[in-house]
Structures are given as C-alpha cells and as structure tokens.
Length: 294
Image (cartoon, rainbow, N blue to C red):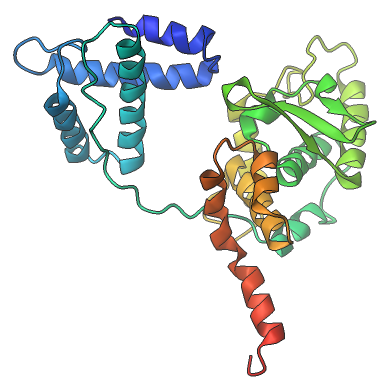
C-alpha cells in the first residue's frame, strides 16, 4: 500500500484541503519512519497493533503532546480504514488502539470590554494600513471565521445586499455568515481605500498584503498579534483567539449552541461545547442579580 494512493483518495474523493493533506502526509511519514526503525523490515502492510502501540509510547517518551499523538493516530486510522475497504490489507491494526487522554483544553478569549476598547480606540488612524488592520480584527471577531477562511475571501465572497459573507471551511464545506452594520461600514471603507491604494490590482482577494497580493496566513497572524498586543492581560494573541472570542460573546449574550455551531462551521456539536465554560461570566451576572445575599 502506498501513502500517495491514500492521499489521492483524500484529495479527489474526500475533497480535503491542501493544508489538511499536508498534515496527513507529515503524520503518515512519521509513522513510516518509526516502522523503518523496527527489526524485521516492518512496513505499513505488515505492522500490527503492538507496533502502533510502540510508536505511541515512543512519541510519549519524546515528549509529544497527547493532542499531537492523537492527531497522528487519527491519520493512521484513516489510512488503514481506506486500505481495508479496498482489500489492500487483510486487517486494521489501528482499530483498537487508543491514544493518550488529552487534557481538557479551555480556549482563551478576549473579554468583550477589552475588545470594545481596542476597536473603539481613538488611536486608530484613517490611513489605509490602519483601516485594513481594523477590518481584519472586526472580520475575525464579528464572524468567527478561521484565519485560513479569511485569507481565502474574494470580493465576490461578500454580499452587501444580503448582508452575508460566503466562506469555504474545512473539507471545502461552504457556509454563509451574516454581518451587521459595523462590519458593513468597515468593509466598504476598506474596499474604497484599497482600490485607491491598488487601482491596478491583479488579484481578486478581499484582503491584500503590502504588495497588493492576497494576504497570507503568516502575514495575517503577525498583523493580529501586533494589534492584540494592546490588550495587556492576553497570554495568546493569535487570530484563533478572536474566533474563540466570537463564540464566547455569542453564548454569553444568549445565542444557542446549535446556532453558534453553524456559524463556526463545526461538524460536531461537541466541538462547540468547549466554549460553554466561558459562559461562567453570564452565570455570575445572573447570580449577582438574582441571589438576595449576593
């Protein structure tokens, strides 16, 4: 069995993104590299359950996180399921293997009052660079889209008439995210200034970098990190923090879990449920108002 055949299947039949395929490739190559170290010329076709367990133990000894180990194991499981269904292997050695338990991950978010102070600050300039930066922050915070989804946006992705942005998420699944007046005004201002800055642009991208090309993830990450550094009590300053902040703000202000799931593009409700811990702020408010001794 060749890894390349499995990756072709994921690309053409399962329509996985290039980023996802690269992750699969690296994880499966790590698995094959481990098998090459074993005695007896063990291959993907001949590996058994104990070989996979040994691989997990080796990763744990190297200090790999439970999350990384479980991700790699998931890639191996997917490959063996594919191979078994097509008769390329006689059994699935990964089927009964369990990865290490993950420690519960609590997403960090920006408090609503901190976000309001940042976005409403009088220090924002009226120049193109400042307008672009503020547009990026509002896009991430008011839609909850992933950074990769933002960098993929074209002008045609924004429907000002319907008040929605069409994004393509994981697995090339499309969804529409509504937006309000603030984001509408900000986008219109940005597009106007961008068109003056780059009147002859050759790229259909909504957000451009300093060279007039589609902004990359790394450029976006650096921009967001720099702007979020104004919030002193924030340990993490990645674009994903604003996605967490969107979900937290929605739940704290009365949105139901299923609606937030759809807006975020989560395929499983359990993924969205991780944000429910942050609604403790709301519980404290209810307690303070309702309890006679609070």
